[in-house]
Length: 94
Image 1 (cartoon, rainbow, N blue to C red):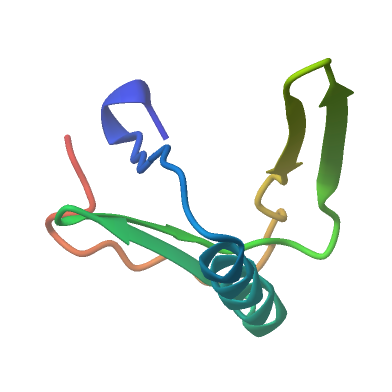
Image 2: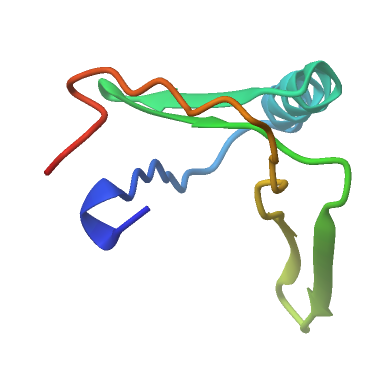
């Protein structure tokens, strides 16, 4: 995937604890199902996590602020077969 093919959705906002828990529960359910779809403002990213996921966690505590950061990374698994992949006309750019 080239930089022009890059898809990204991001947001930052303050939410209630119960709303955050709901987001995290949806994330866990999606992770268990093997597909995570993030949508916002007409943009979407569909992620397909592999079995091996790199996890980075960082916790910080200051006098007046606490922070917890989670990051998940994975690379698509290599597929080897005798079949050529099927490209739809809008997927293939010459």
